[in-house]
Image (cartoon, rainbow, N blue to C red; front, side, top):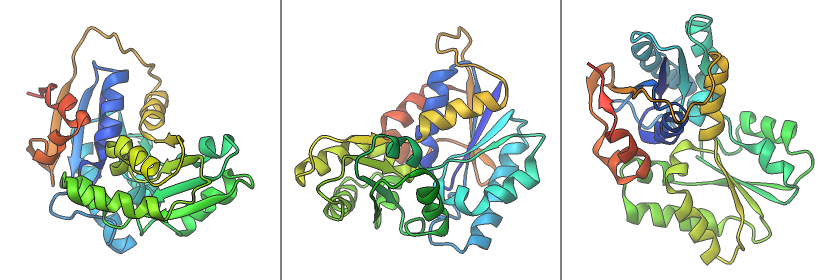
Length: 261
């Protein structure tokens, strides 16, 4: 079994690590766009063009499924990606976990990139799944970029700024960008310091990994005896995990995976 994941940068680490934990026997293909990141500020047409190129580089390695490990790419490019690759390769998008967050009933905040915050896509998810629960959309200026470069000072500054925009009565926060999942505990700590009591953080990585397995008719097997391999594609060329990835537990987990031969 081979699972491919795509993103402009290391935001795909959380979903990749989730796949690895569910199926350590799976071969992993990570397709990144270091020449074109970040995708957030790009026009939808430009982003879609780059996403298609990254996806096709992954598809050339014959994966059984492709995970779009980026919320912004899912918003703008998922339809085009599915038209290009399905049914031969199932394409799984990454959607903010608004539905399970709203099921808790308390006020919800959605932390997302400025490009996603307030977008028709996110507003549609809120209308469809929030069910009358109060929802605050919080733009996180510079947070994805700071995480991408493992810039701790910039991460702390961006997290603090977003925490200041989060209402005190919020009980649940949805992390609407895959990069944010890599610093989830720092986000929780910052919200605590800003006066918001202990809350629930909702991430997408685990659900996306499980959905990918369902789409190809596989089940989780965390005790699988076989050990999968890792292929990293940087604009279609085989390479190594970007150095900032190793600042995170998810990146270090993948560093231990044997490279494909």
